[in-house]
Image (tube, rainbow, N blue to C red):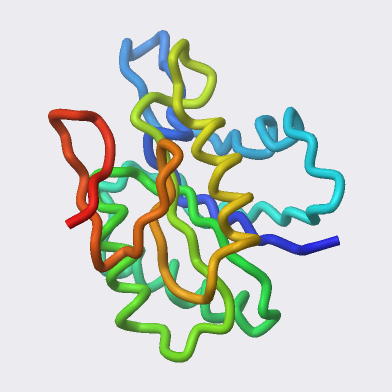
Length: 167
């Protein structure tokens, strides 16, 4: 059985609708509920809720907290998937790539354009593909969304198309 760490930081993938406020917002972690829907008989997935923020609200201190937790987890040699908001996902990935030398396992960032549980959400697809990609990729930092894998140094969000593209 292969261990995979899933580090949750928030973003659209984990947003919920607030009836009181009439907006979607990051309030509670919900990745565990969706992991339970997947058949992953030979994967030992450890979900760690580090924070639950919109990526536009992430600070340098937040990115440092992500880096520090990733560095600790990397000592085990297991792949790491990070759920993250798509607006600053690449910036966080590039920060990790600059900060962590001599990686021994892949680090995969993923998220969603539409929250998990909403009609038309890409969240479960992206989560599933990221868990699969993390088992196959060479050590490095990647973005995985919409059936595509990108090295973090060669990707950007294309807002018009609602996806990520190679740079």
